[in-house]
Image (cartoon, rainbow, N blue to C red; front, side, top):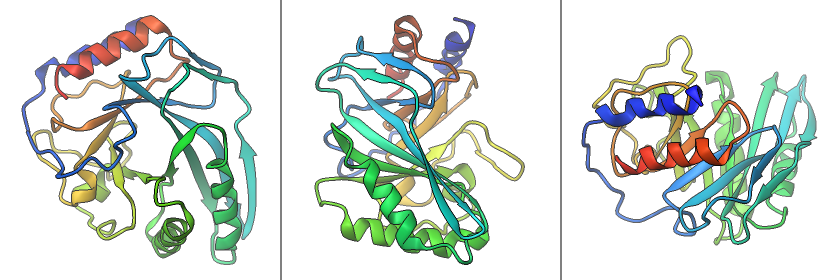
Length: 241
């Protein structure tokens, strides 16, 4: 319970009222919870209020070899829940990797039942950005026009580093938690690229002082969600959406 209640620190948020001209994810509620690689029983959520972005698979690129680890933990959701398949990419040497193999592994995740959107989670190094950009271009070309392509983004990508401008994605979600060395978010500021200005990612175990308002909010939780913890998080988020 303590972990979930840390989110109450959001009561000090300031009002930055930017809203995108159009909703990049019209099929999804304004609040989405991440369901990571752990058992998740989310049949208690209201599908009109909360969507679910679940880790569908992890793609490993090592020495040019591409391997896939599918989701191994059960996920139960309420009927009608808007589902987003999240594919995590972890790389150790992409020089000889087949982009086609990576693309194929990702596309398979969109074929899972009920999936309405795809999100790529890849902390690409500077040397991997050309590969990542080309991969996103490929995915955008082959995905149905009705399936939005989302990506997570390091905070620095949306503030001091503008390399993601022009990427063919519906949104880039600034990850304002688990920030490492060199990462920065200046409370009260908004993000530079427009693609970063429709959503934000937070965690229940890391208090924030101030984030832009009017965004779709993705909520990470370090444990399996309980009904009580999710309700507390969603109620607090509504105070500043």
